[in-house]
Structures are given as structure tokens and as C-alpha cells.
Image 1 (spheres, chains in turn cyan, orange):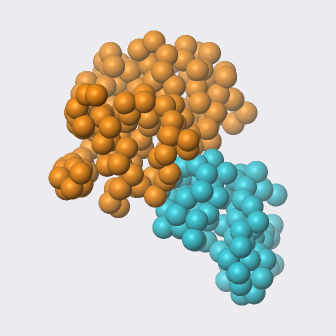
Image 2 (tube, each protein chain N blue to C red):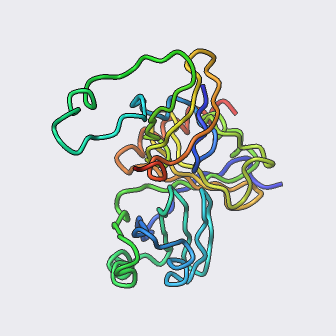
Amino acid sequence: MRLPCPYCGNRDAAEFVYRGDAAPRRPDGEAGMFDYVYLRDNRAGEMRELWYHAQGCRNWIVVTRDTVTHEIHGSELARDNKR
Amino acid sequence: MGEALTVSERTGLGIATVMARRGVDAAAIGAVLGCALPGGPGWRNGGDLSAIGTGPGTWLVMTETGSGDFAEDLTQRFRGLASVTDQSSAYAVFRLSGHDARTLLQRGVSIDLHPAAFAPGSAATSMISHIGVIFWQMDDAPTYEVAVFRSLAGSFRHWLDSVAATL
């Protein structure tokens, strides 16, 4: 699988570290912290995922990928995807 | 046609990482540096300086006339604009030149080095034989330079010699 890094271009998945679902947002207080840290959906279908380009530009990116077909719909720098 | 492949090591270089502060663009940094900076992964040469884009707002800046004060000098000039880290002793830089250079490098990286995709002025950060590399193309010979972490230079040279023997 090749991932489209917004900075580097298409790169082999071996250059990246997978972090998982990009949807969870850190809660302001303790309420919801357990869910934020531990609970993740295991979705079949389109999903926004965090990947770290460790062997490239060393930036976190968000990739929109279909977990069933592995089709990739786009990517952006995680810094541009902040709250 | 010249030599099929010439390999040499660049020595005495001043090398520094320049990371732009938030909201500071490449043009502002390039103006202070006196060398245009690539907006993406690329290599630019200006005067005795060259700059390689290694990430968003991040460049590897090199000078041939490297003194021990190179990074310190940049730190002073970029105060408030960018953070500077001295890398002069951190990287070994190999120069690969000749018509076999592309074939050799292509056997190490899963990035398309065809002239239509990777030309003089192009640069990339990737890995060769599990070793992190930054490389850029300088001319159509073709000539490439590859920067590797100095402690892994021996391992990189081993890979290079092994592949060169098969060309």
C-alpha cells in the first residue's frame, strides 16, 4: 500500500507509523477521558486515520481510507486538522 | 560520456536544520538567508548555500565554506523567524555521479527517479536499506547527493558498494 503524504507525495506504507482513528477529541475535563484514551470503533468502510511519516517529513497526517477496499480518498497534514 | 559512476564524500560542510516559526513562510526565511527556499521537497542552490526541503517549514541548509560558526550565525540571523540546529557533524554526505547513479539509487528507494518524475532540483526524505536518507538531484549527469546519519555512514557505504558491484 502507498499513502499520499501531502508533503512528500506517494510513499510506501513501510515509511509510516499507524496511529488509528483521527476522530476522537480530547475532552476538557475527566468526563469522557476513558473513552478518549481507550475506546476505538473498528469500522468497516471509510475512515479518517492518523499516520506518522516517520521515515519521511516526520509529520502527522490524516488519511481518508476505506478499510474494506483500501481505496484512499485523500490526505492532509494533521496540523491543518486541529480543533 | 564520463565515468559510469563516481562516488565521493563531501567533507567540511556546514549543515543546519532550519524550522520556521508558526506563521513564517519560506519567502521570509529565504530573504534573510539570501537563497531561495523550496516550498516542497526540493533542492535550491544560491551562492555558497544550498537548501533542501525536508518537511513543511523545515529545511536542511548547507554551506561549502562551513565554519564552526555556521549554525550559530544562522541562529542569530533567524532570531524570531526560525529555530536552527547545528547538524554539521550529524550527517555524512555522499555524492553519486554518472549515468549509473540513477540505477544505483533506484535500487534503494521506492520513489520514482525517472527524469520525468525526479529531475535536477528534486529532493526526497526516505530510507535505503532501513537507513534514513535525504537525497537530492543536482544535474542531468545525473549527480545526486545523499545525506545519511554519520553513525550509519559505514552501513550505507556497505549497501552502496554491494549494489554498485552488480551494475
